Image (tube, rainbow, N blue to C red; front, side, top):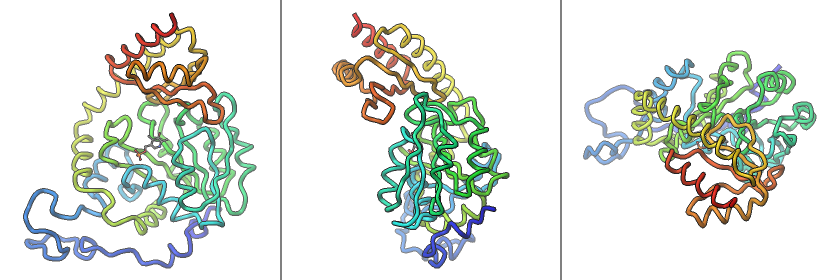
Length: 345
Ligand SMILES: *Cc1c(COP(=O)(O)O)cnc(C)c1O
């Protein structure tokens, strides 16, 4: 049986959350003299809504999930940091991750003084579920999964996720930064069955708003309450909340951009297949291709000379001679394809 009580750090249980002016008075008034704000209206002179009610309502509508199961952060990076801080006792607890994967997990674990144990993917970047389950010990609090995974691009199969959720008594975090590019369903569908599941999404990728920094966490009411208790009160600023609401209300724009990126992704794959020094194109459910080339360092530098920067992943485990290429606009991709063709002749 999963008991959240056993996962919340003692100091987090004992601490009192900051009570802001906006917490003390949530009604509507004519005159606000309670928060030492500047009274001259500029659209941003007031503190933001600490619980982002309007924005959560919009997200709740498009994701068909209650606002009580949503917590928002200053990017997924903040959300993930809060998860470490809420549930992992520094120097004692540990978390499991599945390299090669997103680099921030390691940074956040180190920052929080939490040991991060690797469960390596296999050569096809598939998850080795039994091996992962074997890594769990009594101090393992988190299992961090990324689906679709960065930098490989593949997704974890539902049966495997369910096996991990069924067989482990840990909090299982699934980072779905790229889910909107994928044909797979989000694992938020499993939240009603698994009280130990946390799903993270972001507006940074398919939504095209990396600059506003909005990360979304979906979990049980109880987990969301813990994260709300420890988050900085005004972690999502007024401009971010406004922009995010605007974009969600203009979903046609999201859909057309997404469609174009997926079309470009297909086109880029066909072109990459024709390049002799591209040895492998890994399956991808995300907005990038991970490719294996003859010499990643050399190809990286050659592309840079043409003014094109890709991500050289050759030093990552299992990614020898791999480049990660984000899908750009038609014009950008054409430039890339032209450069690659010229390099092989
Ligand atoms: C890009 C990315 C994110 C996004 O993080 P934000 O802080 O929301 O911009 C999260 N996880 C993975 C795996 C990513 O690749």
